[in-house]
Image (cartoon, rainbow, N blue to C red; front, side, top):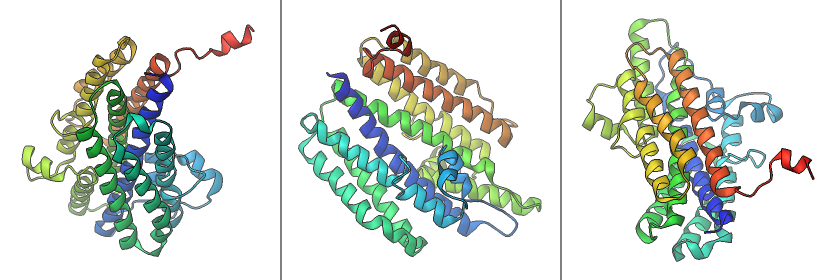
Length: 320
């Protein structure tokens, strides 16, 4: 397989996954705001920090109010990670290697792009309209993933799609979990406890994990249990450990996988060594930051090994 095709498949699915998770994050935050009791504060700037886009946002926006943040995350053309931008990039990538994918794939991804392009402006009409549009983005993206899983040979091309999806998903799961550490809780202990429960319920809901959490962990939503489930459960497809195992499986099919495989296994060991007992928000934030840095290293290793094998280093260019 050509490296440019492998890279295109990898980024196509990363873009789609990022759009999906951004939509989930916005809808989850909207539900949190409706449920927060008096005295609890949750600024929309948390979403910008969660996605790691705070520097880019502050270049063009002075206020972090709901309207500005949502516009930036959904349809801002200057934001390469906005939902509209991600879907457009995924569509453009798909255009160049349509022959590798199932015939219906182009129709579905083009339909998703046309849908968000025409409906993105309506997000300013109200939260209920915004929720509906973003829910449609999530459902349509799920339809695309289902098509690939059921109608495409699980060959080398499929493994690069799988790599992109699971690496992006694992990264975004840590970011969504981390969002709770930025909520200012009310001073009343009873209300604070209720607020924490609602926040963790919203986190589970954002990842479509609430029902499975109740089934496998329990009916009581406790922060420590939620974090442990979303980071370490090996059976639910959106947990970090599950995604890392999927990445390992895909790498095992590819040649010359030693460097990225070692990095993935190092991250898995880091997760296994985390202790949930007494894990305060500051410590959790630090741990998740390190895991996100690990994902960045893994991506760089994948790029060096499979996408830019013959790319000259700055040192080599300087010698010419």
